[in-house]
Image (tube, rainbow, N blue to C red; front, side):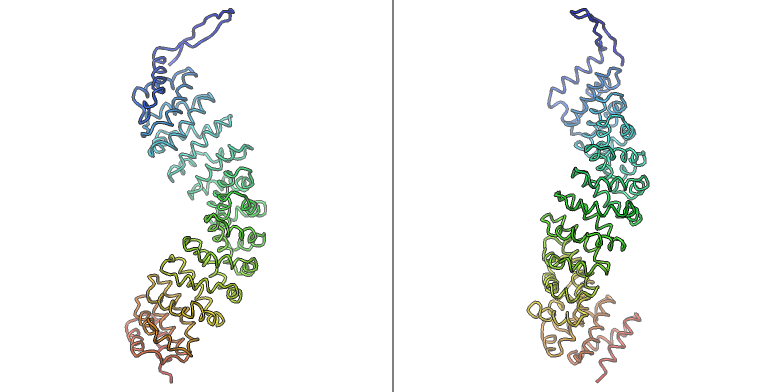
Length: 541
C-alpha cells in the first residue's frame, strides 16, 4: 500500500512533510496498537484480524509502518504460545528483505523468538515458509548487528539434522567463517555457536573443514569470552570425531591445536575445560597424537582436572587419559606423573559409572604394558578387587574393564601372591561368585581367567576350593555346561591349570564326566583340542 504526503507550514514558516496514511493502513495500525495494549489479546494465537493488520503494514511502502509491523512481530513473538502457520510467517519474511536496519533488527528478533520460545512446531513452519534464504542473505549485510541477529536465528533453526544439512546447503558456511573473524565478541559468539550446532552432522563437518573452518576455530580457542571458547572447543571436539579430519587439525601451524587446547584447559570456566578435554580425547584416538600430547606436556594439564569437583570435567579428563594410555610409550610417564593414586580414587566413585569405566580402562591399558610393580605399590589391585566385591551395584562396562585388568595382571606370579591376601583372603570366592552369577559373559570369562591363574597358588590349601560354597567343582560345572564357547574354553583351561599345579585330585568324577560329554557335543576344533589336552592331563599319574 502507498501513502500520500501532506505538506504544511509550521509557525516559523518551514515546510513539513508528514505521511498521510490511507484509511486501511490507519485502521490496521489502530487495530494492532489497541490489541498490543491488551495483555491477553495475543497470548494464545494471532487472530485473523491481527494477521490482516500485519499484512497491511508489512507490505506498505511506508518504512514507519513496516517498522511498526516488525516491532509488533517482535513483541508478539514473546507472548504467543500457539503454533505459527505459513500465512502468519509471510509478512515477517517480507520484512526480512526490507532495506532498513531497524526493521531488519526487529524482524530477526521475532524469528529468533518464535524459533526458541514458541511452539515446538515453529521451527518446521519457519523452514517450510522458506525463511532460511533471507536469513542467509542477511549474514552478508553491511550492518554487524543485523548479521548477528540473522546468525542467532539460523542457530535457533539448526536443531534437527535435516535443518542443519539444509542450512549448509544454502551456502551459510563462508558467511559464518567471515563473521567469526570479526573482532567483536558478539559476532564471534554467535558465529561459533552456529558452527557448533552444524558440526553435529557428518556431512556438515566435511563441508566446514573443506571451507577452512579449522584454522578459525583453533584461533578462537584463545578468545577472551568463555562462551566463544566453549563453542569453539566443542566444535573442534565434534570435528575430531572423524579420523580424516584429525590430521588436518594437527597439521595447522605445527599442532597449534594442542597448545591452544591446553591453554583453554587452564581457564576458570568448567564448561570450557570439559569441552577442551573432550577435544583432547578425540584427538588422542590417533596413535601419533597420543605421543605428541604427552611430549607437549598434556599430562601435567590433565592431572589437576581429574580432581575437579565438576564431574563432567573429571570424566572428560580421565577419558582423555585413557586414550593416551593406549600407547605403550606413555605408560611410564603416566605413572611417573602420579595418575595411579587418582585412578584408584576414581574406581570408588560408585555414583559416576562413566568415570569408573574410564579409570578401569586406563588401568587395563597400563597393565598390558608391564607396569606390574608400580600397580602393586600404588594399591591399585586392592581398588580393582573392591570393584569386584561391589559387583551388584557396579555398571557392566566397569566390571568388564576391571575384571579384564585383573585377568591381565594375574598372569604375573607376583600379582597372584598379592591377590591371595586381598578382601581378607577371600578374593577367590568373589571371583567364583562372578563366574557363576554374573549376567555378563565378558565378566564371567575375565573372572575365570584370573581364577585360573590363582589356582596355582592353592596347592597348600586346596581344601578351600573344595569345601567353600560355591565350590570349585560348581564353577567348573557351570563353565563346561555353558552354551558359550569362550566359557567352555575357560573351564577346560582351569582344569589344565589345576593339573599343572598338582591339584587334579580335587576334581570330582562328575567334572571329568562333563569333559567327556563336551567332547561328544562340541563341533569346535578349539574345544576338541582343549578336551584332549584336559583328558590327557587327568590321565597322567
